[in-house]
Every structure is written in C-alpha cells, then in structure tokens.
Amino acid sequence: MPAERSQAAGRVTISEVAAEAGVGRATAARTLGGYGHVSPELRQRVLAAAEKLGYRANALARSMSTGVSHTIGVIVADIGNPFFAGLVRGVCDASRARGFDTIVLSTYEDLDEEVAATNVLIDKRVDGMIIASAAVSGREVGHVKEALTRGVPVVLVDRAIPALDLDAVVIDNRDAAREAVERLIAAGHRRIGFVWGPPMAQPPATRRELLAAASRNLWTDGERLRGYLDALDDARIPFDPELVMVGRKVEERVTQEVARMLSLPDRITALFCTETEAVTGALRALRAAGLSYPRDVALIGFDDSAWAAVMDPPLTMIAQPVHELGAKAAEVLLDIVQGAETGRETHTLRSRLIVRSSVGPPPSI
Ligand code: RIB
Image (cartoon, rainbow, N blue to C red; front, side, top):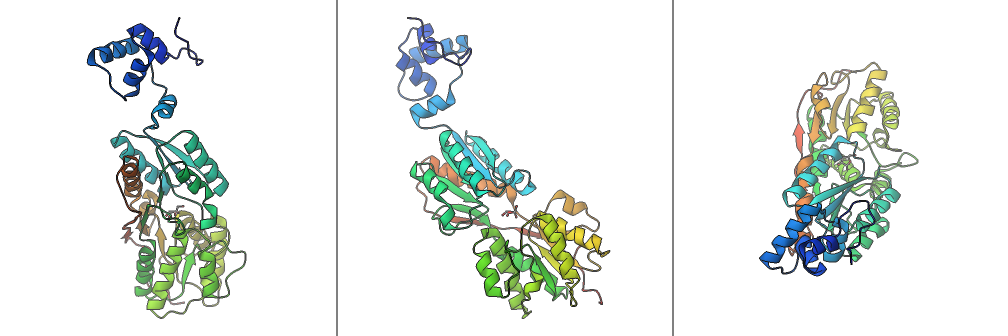
C-alpha cells in the first residue's frame, strides 16, 4: 500500500519515511518525534530515510501527539514601542537559549485583541505564554484564566494584575517615579506636572478621586502616579489636581494638557513624564509656547531611548532593564514549563535614573 501523500504539496509523511526505512509507522513516529524507545539500528534506518526523502517534522502534529511544542508565546501592547521591542528581544534570546521558539503578538492596548491573541496561542499549542496585559482589573482576565484552565502556564511581564495569583516580572515603578520627582524637588521645584494620569472623562476634584481612577487603570501608570504623590508628600508639597494630565493617553492630549499647565497663573516649572509619548507630547507643548528645558521647565521622563541621549540638551530619563525583563519572564515561564515547582512570585527588577541635562532650577518667573 503506497504510503499516503500528505495534503500539503510535497510534504513527506511519517508513513512514507517508515516505508522507505522498512519499519513500522510507530517506530518511525517515535524516532522522528523524539519520544519512546527505538533501537540504534532502526533509528539509523529511519533517520537515513527521512534525510533521503527530505522529511520535515510537522511541528503542530508533533505537539498534538507529544503535548510539547517547544514554543512559547509573548503578547505585548505595542511592538512598535521601543520598550516592548527590547522586552521581546529578551524573551526571544532567553527562550532560544533553552531550545524554544517564540511567537510574538501585539495588541495595541486593546483587550479584545489581547483575548484573540491568547486564543491564537492556545490554538498553536504553545507550551506557555508571557503577557504584558492591557487588562486593568480582575474582571477582565477571563482569557488568562482560560489559558490556565487548558494547562497553559502564564507569566505576566511589565504589568502586574493584583487580582491574579500569577508569576510576574516587573520593575520598581513607584520607587523610580518617587526618585525622579525627588530630584526635581531637590532642584527647587514645587509646581511639578504629572503626565500621564488615568484616562478620566473629567479632571479629578480630589486626590482620592484620582487614585480611584488610577486603580482602574494600568498597574504601571498607577504605580508611577503613587510615586509622584509620595515625593510630594515627603516634601510637604500640597497636591494640586490641576497639575495631573488625565484623559486619553495620546500624545496630542499631552500637548494640550501641558499647554494648559503652562498657562496657569502659578504655572508648572517642572514635568515628570511617565513614558515615551508623554515626553514627546510635553516637548511639543514647550516648543509651541516658545519655552525650553531646562531653562523654563525642568523635565524627567520614563523609558530611556537612544534619542533621549542625543537631544540637545540630553534628557534625564528613567531607564528600564527591558531586555532583562523579557529574559527573566522567559526563564520563569520555561522553569514552569519544564516542571520546576515554583511558588507564585513577583520578580521586581531595578530601573536606573540616567541623569543628563534636562533638570535645572526654577526660572525666576
Ligand atoms: O507603553 C510602554 C510603557 O508602558 C512602558 O513604560 C511600560 O512600562 C509599559 O507599562
């Protein structure tokens, strides 16, 4: 009986390799699938036949028979953001070093996209997945629970989800934000703008209202806001809700809100910007107002990049260990995949404040 040809054009099947080697299909399957026992003599015959016919293992079929795909998935909010690009590089490098491939999916901070991406990875039978989630509450993680129910381990990266008892690899967001704002205060600033706060429809009337909105927002954003407030409290600087940008987290809103803060009677003299588009939006507002940093406004940003170092003057920025974040998340996940008994743990990596030249004393307004 001629061995069945696979449907896909030209794909050699296990049965064809078995026929060529003169062994049973099960022997060929065990040899090519890398599981079970096969005598050295038969193994050699199967491998020689596979090479002669140009056999390529059908990875998905193999994963279905062995339950192992040697592939993990990583879901990030925006692969175009240098932060996530560096993080994904760390995941890929660490997983490759342990013999695993990586499938990368980007969700643009859209939860529906994240749910769809999770289902793609489940269907692709990944051995585990790493998620930098857009979910902001325990009510939005049904897709993560679905993966866990199907036996697919999940590690969170960059954003913890307190409602989920999962391993997470994050940075010290709150301490990093507090240290940056303390540096602005030490330079003499008291009117310090915060960009960006939670996407609220209306500006907060009180600190409590702002923090309540932050708790319904991304964990990283909330932690950075709490670090800003910690520094103000430690210096006994009263919190002014007018100095926090809220609303849609997009660059043009940042520019509008910073322009508003600059036009206040008691205007801001410093800005703490919590990620890349918060920095670029603030710089656009300064330029539109004919102001410059650090002469008119001191500025510290989050997520250092090559461009921040070549600005004139170069920007003082918080640098996250992006490659290490990804690599550590992959190591934690692969330990779980490969059977290590690990308790649920949040691994907190340290960021660094890269002091350059965007902080000076308040102008004599
Ligand atoms: O969009 C990228 C930013 O959000 C980074 O600061 C990262 O920490 C993520 O949470």
